[in-house]
Length: 29
Image (cartoon, rainbow, N blue to C red; front, side, top):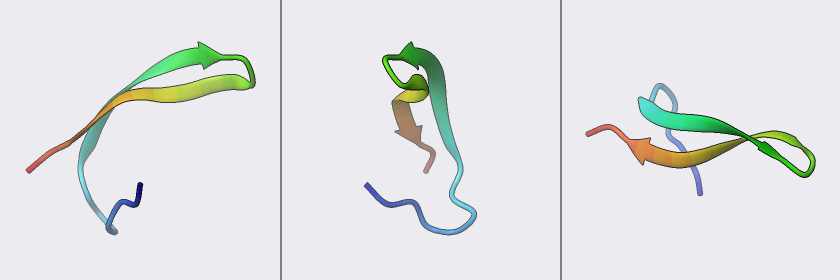
C-alpha cells in the first residue's frame, strides 16, 4: 500500500506483536 504525499487518511492504532500498528486504514476522498 502506498499513500501519496499529503493524502488524508483515518486509522486506528492497535497494539500488535511488534508494537503499535495502524489498523482499519481508510483513505479520505
